[in-house]
Length: 71
Image: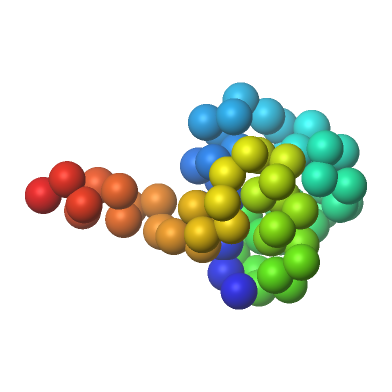
């Protein structure tokens, strides 16, 4: 699954990739790869969502989707 909303969620939480990775107990490279658009396992997405205190669906939606919902 692609996590196009991950970077936006991480920035809203005011976390670095390293801080998020530590909190989610994944490698920082995993966070970087996911932000770059690589496919991730759902188990990894759940761990990161839990660390960010968001639903996994939040990480899966496009950052531009919010802008289109307001129209």
